[in-house]
Length: 393
Image (cartoon, rainbow, N blue to C red):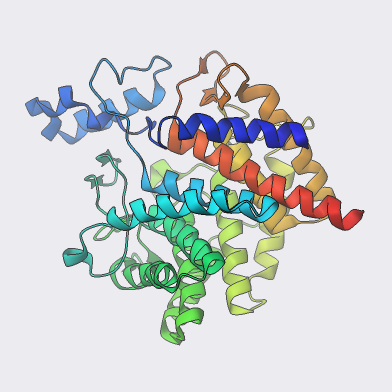
């Protein structure tokens, strides 16, 4: 246990050294080189360029003048991890650092004149097949992760202003992302788009249900329950979910399945309903039986081990302990954490690598996708383990 605490402290130190900034798998559209050419206006060029940055094991960003920057979602994850370390140690320095990062997030909110309510987006332009998202345009996942971090910090420090900002983010989701399309009720990933993905919609439902209860807004709670039921209805008989209904979203992966289950648990706990218990049990059984090898390796896809990715291991920690939480789940989580370190940790740098494919290892240091998830999940695990061991003794 002490070794893992030291490992995560070293990881945090490496992030502090660069002021919580860095590269991201999806940030190649921040290239000053590309932005200076007319090609930037072509969506297929943007999509190909973004995929080049994501898939290349060689870091092209310094050559293409992509700056290292903070990512609001990554900062939200760092705050959550700092709060776990505070809960474990009661060292107020973690709180002070979390507060400084929260102050940065408050000034990074998306345009308040346009969106009225608190919300956040990525620090880079982002081209998907279904839509294009300019830097700063709010999205549901970033908004949810930031709001949860700010709420927890506000609760610990008795800062009502932070709590108010976090709950206000649910207003943005309820007003700007509530969508009816193709016979479905869901929360969209970004305003104005009709693409439906389960994890985004369910995280929106979880936060709106929680915030609705805190605000006494039963219409928001009812909306969130209606949205959650849409994804529950589309759960497969074996407990799985595809990413979404579009033809290129017909894949099943571990960390998005984990997102879905964690979000449903949060919604259940916020509302006190048992409506989703059967769905959660079925989905969790599928998750545990599908996405782990015997030695604790977290699989990326339901039918494929690779790529081996810290994101899969990190979400596994949250899913196993928050959705499962039995002694058997903790034992599996112990194996998962040890396996993540064996496969992905770089002792010389005190950081985790991005991915291992069957043929290549990508060691590019990605702050939001890799290090923030690694730090946040291991801080949660260390706190959970310390409390479990204390109770056992």
